[in-house]
Length: 356
Figure 1 (tube, rainbow, N blue to C red):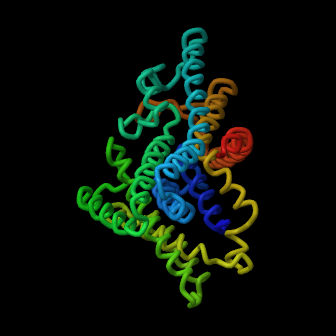
Figure 2 (cartoon, rainbow, N blue to C red):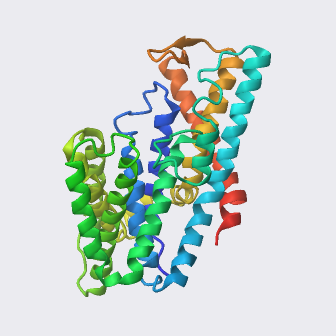
Figure 3 (tube, helix red, strand yellow):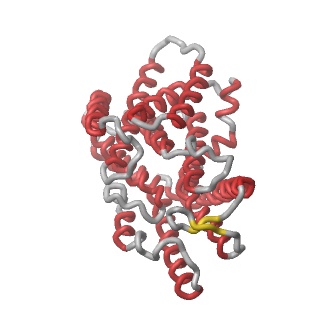
């Protein structure tokens, strides 16, 4: 059985929580909106490429293995996606009832964006290609990632020896067509999928380098110090990169992942990033990623319409809670706690039930 990298579970948890902070959309001093950014989705893509290649690079040798791999990845992603797709469909029905029969002023038009076409595109995991960011909007990345898995398995079938070459060719092509501009900043029908491929194949390259390193006899010195350095560099890059330099983010992520795999769990740094609670949050991070928007919708609208908190109309003509910084901070923490509790149940009773 291959080694499980505990540090990567902690990173997965942190990334999911930062993405959740964006969608909580609260003006709290607890949330640095430069740090809590969509770039953590790119981190997921890079991490996924590393982990998938590490676990499957020598297991996909024919089309039988190919279909087994695709089936495993499908059942890893799809059940939770389908569950929340149905949940958000029920939310649309609830909004219709509340608007029609109780006169509540809901921000969005009922079934305007979350319509039949969007539901079908979500069912078939095609919504990232159709620029259809509806229902459980974070699931666009699941759509992109699933088809990236298929591309990976298809390439590796022919020769894992040349997969690294294919990876470099794909990366060069993606760099050329993007010209290093607006990377990860826009959601177009093709760019979201290309962003996923770009991050995923950088993950593959760094995993290949890691596998080669592990076959050597030399010992890497100062690995904890280097890891800490790249944790700092990663935070700095996410906060400050805004233009063409965004293209280097998956490379920085890849270096961080590479060195983090070598962190000794008994070291000072290892005791922090391999903490059991953080590792557990990493194991339920997919549930956190998929459930946080639903949790926030319930809490946010309960405060508006049940508990009658004050609201204001923002520049986009949306009704938002009128909270001071302390109230916003408390609400962020409360949303996190409820999201983690809910994710614990969805992990146990949905995700794990369909592991293949």
